[in-house]
Amino acid sequence: MKKLLLLISILLLCACSSDSIELKKYNSYIKELNTSENSREIPFDISIDLNKFTDKEYIYKLIIDNPKEELRDIEVLIVHDKDTNDIFPSSGIFDDKYNLIPNNINKDINNVKGIILIGYLPYEESIDITFKVLFKYKDKYNKINTIIYSTKK
Image: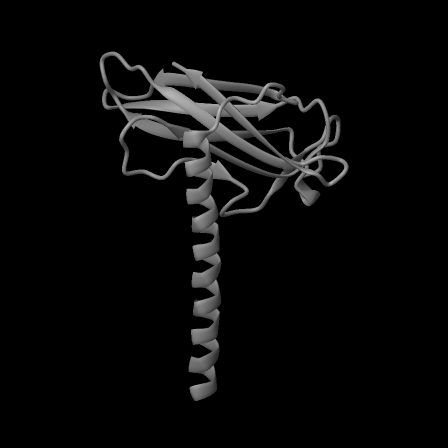
């Protein structure tokens, strides 16, 4: 029984420390987004749509697809400049990392056609909002690249 409790304790500690590392990365990316400027060249198509979802909410959707080169081990985070208690949508930070490779879709090895992140905002009659996206990936030479994209809606 003591061995079982010890094993469970070790597993919980490992899980908590792993979440802590991911949370630190998430928070550092938010800080990086708040202090960075737009990147010049983006090797994929990107769009951010903002639409009224209900009488009380907007829905925003980030779509990344049509890669122009190999993009591997992707991490994506989208933030906005409105006050919120919600977390910002992300991919590859708390979950599996995906790859965007031209003409190569294979879900078994996480090669996907595109990445979509969705978030919600309280409804306001008129909304003026800035979105910023952090996109981190490895290129075909295993070099880590970071792209910052910003747009006002």
